[in-house]
Image (cartoon, rainbow, N blue to C red; front, side, top):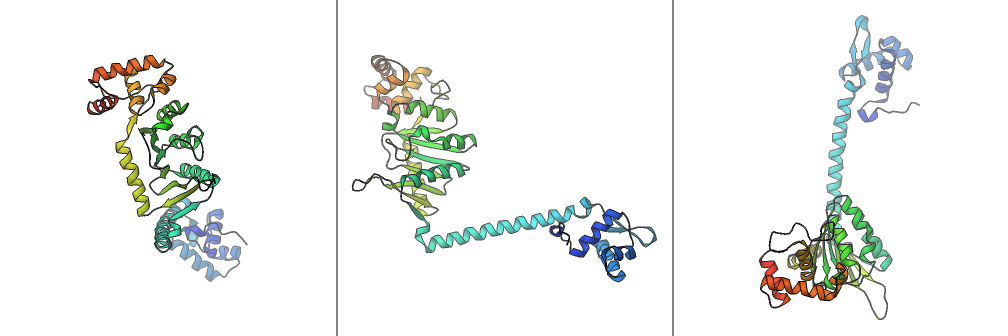
Length: 329
């Protein structure tokens, strides 16, 4: 039995066989068609009339019929069928979302999934970043739980796809060896980074649809991590609001390709001074800054004092306040 390839275009079995024969023959009449298809002449005549009415055939001289070109006869049919399928797919997706929303309302376990181990948490971190399409929000605290920040290669791949990253780093994390260079590299690739003295929790939110955060890190000497995957809910909205509130409070960190602050508002500071101020206001200790810049601690302290004199500040807190007021960063 011949495979029905034209069924998606709306052709029945007999109609497809007749049209194929007509295309191969170029022209035919009812008698010849009946013989080729093994049907009665009346059936062949009816099939030809149906094809004529459907735009698959046209009348030729001497009571014969010729085929209409396939792209003309079948192309519009396929377009209409594809549109119908697209509408049906959208309807199915809408129904599926309504179904999932109903399940979430009836079953809280579907809102929050508990991840019982570090290995499962690492896999979720990888999956959420790989599947992100628009934005990832991150709270990065000192002392990694799943992996060091330098091992988060999924972020680099996501940035390459155009996913927006907004990351808030805890000050203690920026003081860890190699972290300033690592953050600078991420910013070079498009990450937006800010710093706070302390973050309330480790957290990642992907596309504002899922959040991932550890629940318990150490219980009775057990070192494995228990985490939660939070799906669309009021709890997720609260976590997003928490991130946005911390983002507003955090200090921007900006570097150029050569490791210096870039796109800063105009002011009395040169690039080196702005770079130093960016690290200082972010809470990076002077000793760490000296190491990162390859300078002596005394030199860094002298430059900090110079910044304080420019700002008319007596303390580093006053320096940070003046830098914010004058939009140096």
